[in-house]
Length: 162
Image (tube, rainbow, N blue to C red; front, side, top):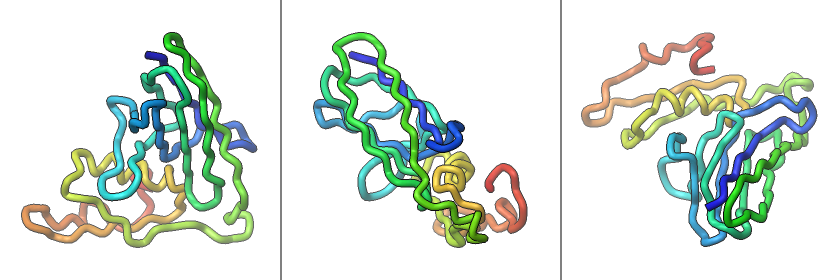
């Protein structure tokens, strides 16, 4: 197995940025870091990345797709992986528009989490960064044994979740 290390950066500033990542190994399997937070639900799988990730993959073409919010173009990179050894790849995301410079601020006013999630607080903390959102409102309804949590995520400036 080879070791693939990805570093995700804003293409203009060079700063490390959070993103959603989908890695498909040469044998067609979705791979992710063992400690990563995974998307729950239908659709293509991805993991949340804080800006860097490391995965073990077999030899051959490894397909990486990186997405961040609506202001960045999705990035696809195919990396030839050796049988053994490490490959480091910089994944520079290109911003196609800068909405805040035009006084537009992306947001999501109806953010949910699934009762199947093992760590919803961590995903809710990462979501605004991965999707490059300036505003988020977390909606939690009482379902079966899940408590109503409006006081857990109050409206207002919260550094942990926004």
